[in-house]
Image (cartoon, rainbow, N blue to C red; front, top):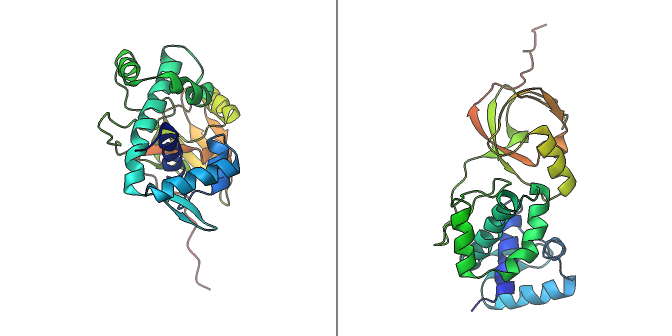
Length: 231
């Protein structure tokens, strides 16, 4: 049977592997706040129990069995984030790290109560989907902002960073989940993006834009180069 620590590792691997084909041990170690040696031992145990696959020099990836044990931990973590922000009035830039320790003292009964008093949320404060109590992860149809053509109408779906400084700045700009905007332009070669918003436009860098995932409500044509003239 999976231990709480295994479920926590599985949840973190699941989150990281959404953007990577394999999760490196050093990156996993950093995100679970554990030493590289302790992480390697846990990975070895989870591999033996068929919760993950580990390829030397590439990293780890969950098996379907591993994804199954990740869902309860992801659900609890994201519900706690909602509770910390909506009820306890912490900033969304504080919620992730606080949730890591806060959730350790929560049992199934308290989790159900948190779910109830927060209105049965389907997304965490950063827009990440919350698995159901049955372990089903909702499907989210969104795309990275940096892949969206200029001229598109968008709604912020997820803010995919745990960097507190980035989150505070993104919050100051008002680019939180559910907010609509129009992508006016995107400079080539990873240049800045200009967003038309109410009450004012914003110019953001490519690195910051890469943290934003959006739902496109109207797709633009993008920046098109003029056709070559015959000589």
